[in-house]
Length: 190
Image (cartoon, rainbow, N blue to C red; front, side, top):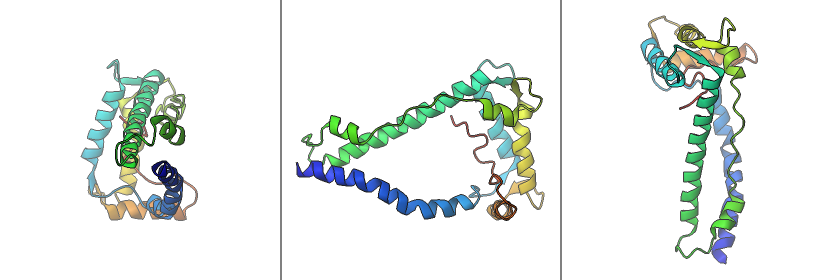
């Protein structure tokens, strides 16, 4: 029973630890996500691979259904990762393996999030330049590569961490706009 109390204490402490880490997370969010120099060729290659992965029917265009499928796939992958972390946490808390912390008790205190309904609309709005309901490779690449060009201050085809941080800093001083980035554009992970 002492172990069950310890588990409850650990679960209660998790949000406190997360809140304590928030200032660091905010400071990191204020900086760009570029950790090493990135070339235009690398970004183009990543965009092409991401587009090909989304283009399920290989017609050279991405429609809302294909984006929704990618969003679901991404959410399922994130949920799987959370499940693995949760299972590892249970194993760590059940130190002697006697099952004092029952699975039902643990599941009750460590609820999994639900996968929300996918919505391709924000992606279509951002990338479907001609508003025909489909995204071509050119439409998919244009906003990100334009941002890359803006961040590449010396126009050498590489964005260094210093250039990315400079762009992030200028975005902060120019008002409430999105942080300059291209690392995870668009936010549809595999």
